[in-house]
Image 1: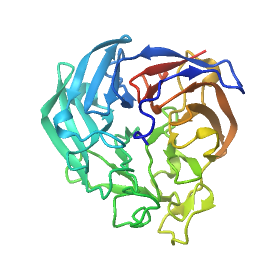
Image 2: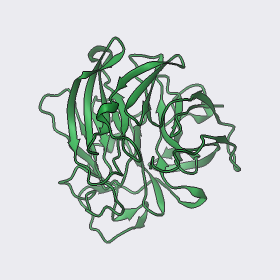
Image 3: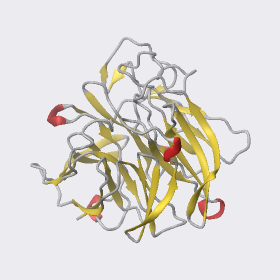
Image 4: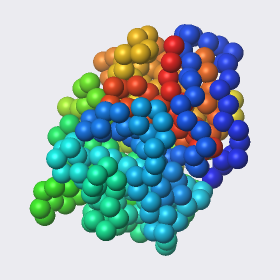
Length: 353
């Protein structure tokens, strides 16, 4: 996904079919390609920006203040590879533990715990939690998120190439094409598969208000999809369908593996220059009242941004927003629940009215 049009200018353009008077305003520029934006309640004035090259920068009260962690010497970067996310433990104020997902110099996935001291990450504290060998350079997934119970989730792509040639996403003996979770502080804990049949869950998130799960799973040739799982069902194995299905359409005659088949709540086509979904967050901030409770997502190539609501497990009130953000690689939240948009051109925007 990141390998396409990274050189395109990040633009904020009016959409032809505006539904609401929402917009975005510039927050930062001059960074390198962004893959994640994060925060922790332990530091309410900070926002963290993850650069694909292998560096995490931090802002205090909206101003860039420095580098939190630099592991460029451990990361291979380019295309869909690089430092792909950071997640802070819910107990970060006490234990100073945070987690990153990156592709190493051989192109394989590593999820590693670090600790911080005096507000900076310490490279020497690295403790590896997960290693997954990658057969190809694309479809690494890469998102990390904590649920309210302190379990760490990682989204794994199907390993790459096209069409999942190894049928890894439906194979429970593979970690590729899966949603995994673990309690990183419990001694002897093992990774658990809670979802399979994912192609490339580049960005996923939990609704901070209720714990519901939203996944933006990147499609193959025709369809991009948003998957939804209520918090009460996350522990029940879900099968998101790939490579038997792309979106809601049959892709191949591949037999489905185990788990409850979960159809997307929303799909969109590759018309209008769309190519790759970037999943976002449910807005729970206070600055933009009319956006409250809406899940925002967009497309990397077209820059179109949509939002929707979930009602009785279905997507309702889906709308195209009246702005575009080109090279849209990621979303993020700050501690107050305000929504940020990050780009492959190193710019950050913030939702506004």
